Image (cartoon, rainbow, N blue to C red; front, side, top):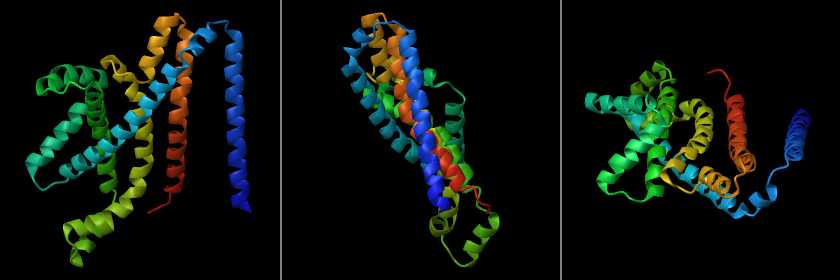
Amino acid sequence: MNARYRVLSLFLSFILVCVLLAALCYGVLQATSGNWTGVWEYRGIFWQGWLTTIWISLVALSLSVLLGLIAAMARRSQFPALRWFAAGYVELIRGTPLLVQLLVLFYVVADAVGLQNRYSAGVIILSVFSGAYIAEIIRSGLESVGRSQLESARAIGLTRWQTYRHVIFPQSTRHILPPLAGQAASIIKDSSLLSILGIEEFTLAAQQVNSATYSTLESYLPLAFGYLALTLPVSMLARRLEKRFSYET
């Protein structure tokens, strides 16, 4: 019964939040006498940009998780050169703004290697940026496993791979998943900077509508709610995972 009441309470809370947001939107619309009709005519541009943001974020998240896993494992490698290279990558990316990385990697590196597709280059750069943060998330999760358990795994004859598979990964997952879900929301928001490369994602769509209608508020308000519709479920998932995995070791 308690579980049923808890689910009902969460559902009612969600409905209340939706009603409050709807009331806020209605109040904003009533308080402004802007060119909403003109902006509505460009709803197709908003929709296409929103969908583009979704697939860019999904692809970038998949690539950055793979890259972050490789970098995290490299930082735990027995080879010093591999550890130093991975550490240099993480510190360089985390220590410089994404905007600078986009400009340098696209107009210098991508142009030098002949990568002309803006979408491919944008996804790769976003993945490289997010991969450095995910590498630290994964590394901290792996290092949360106690040394005594690693020694026990070696004592019973487990290989390095078997130790990771049966001892480290299962226990570190609960430390990795909550911040990883939060990083997914960051990727969605960071994808807005891809507009400077001419990628027709959600932010560039709002800029185009603003240029066509000269209606700044009416163009960027849907942008804010569009990103909120993507990041809010991810943030709620991250908080749910934090509560679920917050037991003592």
